[in-house]
Image (cartoon, rainbow, N blue to C red):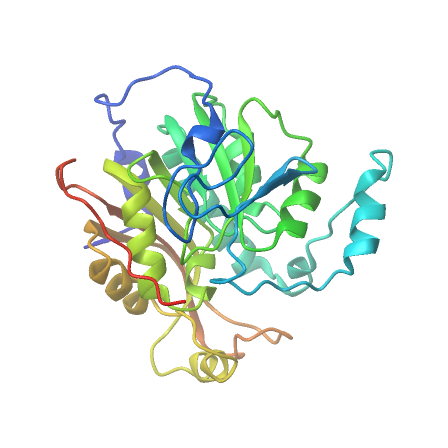
Length: 310
């Protein structure tokens, strides 16, 4: 079901959700991504014995048997950089270099829509593939402070950098290095999941969809926002040549349906014709600025199993 931008003014708050901020014990949310068992206070798996860590404000709960990480930064340089808390770290959004009037207006509409949705958040919000924190910043800027934030990304270094840049409150914002295909978060613990279309960039999107469904509470919602490419376009051809990824709205919808999600809606807030740029979008192609929402609605008794081949 498609919604137009005007529907933002018809968004109604969910009065069934409890309001007010409640601090969480983040360690009680963590599981071993390999065997899905609980971790001790020292971050040791109580079943298989895997040992995980917490350093620089980030929980590193990734199985080396299951996941491959970028490892772009030399570990020695990494440690030297972050041991010194006085080092100032900044981030410049290079994406601003290609924006014109049309794309700026489209992003404003999309961000305004997203802001309206965030105002009704409560409980625990998990941000998938946080990266340098574009979505995180929107969560932090909201006047609504009645929710905890769990930032996740497969690359620990990105989370460490983002934590330093954002200077977030450790009592409300938590950082977990976690693979989207093998989330290190317990079943049915999350109220909302947000993703700045990064979901589509993670390999094996079917696994990602099932994992997001698993960690959501019944009634919990997934919200994906970003730019989407048109079917049959040159931009899609370029994107596919760079590796498997979800780029079109239909691809996202199919992945969510296969993961068990229901009440799936799309809101196209704006469409623009892309100008010349150095990114994957081809000049002259139509790009949709869209927000996709989906929900887990089945009963609490249903158990979601994960099959792992090591």
